[in-house]
Length: 336
Image (cartoon, rainbow, N blue to C red; front, top):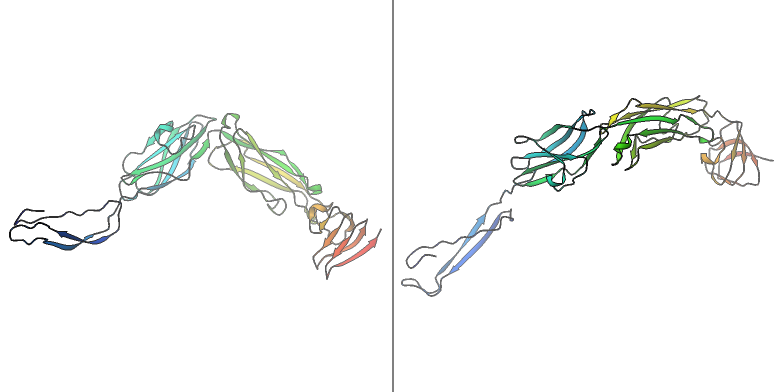
């Protein structure tokens, strides 16, 4: 405050963390008085702070590796937002995952020159063959620094191959076929997921159990299997093929990039035998690998439930078994 006969000033401030508008009042009382001013003179007033605009940190994501050769690879990312200030982008990479602790825990650091804008970022780096690598993207501005949350990206500079190690499957007894996907033993120090497409004359999920399109090799594993389990039916279709073709970018695809398993057909058998207990629709309980069809002789060696009103299956031959029927089921029982 000023002295006698003078003016005075007050200062009011707020913490920078308060980024919303603020309105308030102030009061000043002067005790003791001076010449010409009564004791207790003071005043009141109001103040207003507008909303502060605090710096906003950037955001970005990791993208899959591309353009891989035995000696180089392109490490890809994407700047989603530069926040509210100029942004610098860095990619950290190496043969171990350095986490999100910055350059001290990573073997290599690539800083992109200049100020970045939203969009893709990529840099080519030298790599060694048969080696597993990791990378993470990072962006920073005056609002703070942030690692891409979807990381790290894992890739290895080595070939994956696929072979049909059991190329013969069959609807008879649901005999499976097997594909084996392999990678170099020198690149087994990390988990790797290999992707593939499914083709051939067999329908995935109809003629065989659904194949997912990916298989994972855990740490220490140099191979993984894809099992083709046939689904038997009463259709006379002849042999059908399941073709697996490798795809994906996080590895090199070797010369053996596709393989075929053939499913032998189970033509309609004259006799279909039930074993065990349960509903007749369970194909695994029937010797033919499928529920009975018209024209078959059905032998029941266990308790079976007929729970579909449209079940019309010809003659049953009973051997110490029970048939439980729902209303509307049409069957003929022939004692043996």
